[in-house]
Image (cartoon, rainbow, N blue to C red; front, side, top):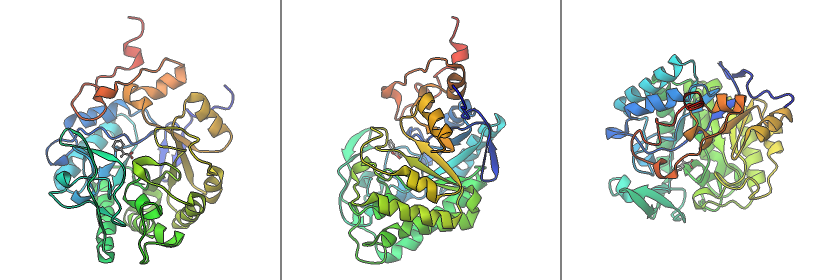
Length: 363
Ligand code: 8OZ
């Protein structure tokens, strides 16, 4: 393969990545009591520290932000202490790690919220399921957020970013994708508000951009990134004009000077060509780092880097069964298949017990 820069170092914001293979955020539902990451989480992430950068599983910024059973948080001292063990273990191995900050909005269930309704831009229930009480269930009917509640949500993201830095993270990625709160505001399929947070493209982007501005002010724009999924139908979301919406959003993100945008091509975890969209338009509008994700293999990753379509490529599912994904891609070793039965919840099985290729070959 010619001109493959995937295994070359890269300067992202203020940090240097050893290579351009990024571990995408992966929800694993294994947090312990108090939604503190388990002891196993430090081992799991450390096993994957040869990634140029690890983006953690989505982590809720408040109690209200949770949408699935046993996902970790970053709003209590115990959670900060738990995450500190994770960042220490990854840094010990020479890796880099940022935390993905998450508010699920309407994608939640009353049983996760002490009986409260999930919150959303508008009282429109998503056609999607969540995982709660050890099974899948339809999400609950949401209630529309009042205008005076939005500053509190922005503040939750701000505090969560500060907590992430306290816990030793190299930065944060705001989850602006996959049908969760910030995307619910941005996309008109979920937002029919008539105040300053609904209607026009500018109004629908407002909450996302205010969150990013607050996070960047708190921890520095060079440590702030965002994940976007312009045309993904994930979690029952839809948008009538994603090109204009995301061109505008990325123009504003450029003005805010953040370190990176992390863009899901097509349907998250599904077809890359689900709808027409000009990703090059986002790339042109953003001068800093562009991370591309969704269904990449070695060849596609190398070609997108060579063509200048992206600076870094995020791999999600391949990292589950291949802790040494970087080395496997680099040496041409075969990739192991993950077991879907142990993807969400449980303990070490299907989490920390996938071996490195070097430990299985030749036996
Ligand atoms: C899979 C299961 C639950 C949540 C996302 C945070 O799609 C998620 C998620 C993925 O961004």
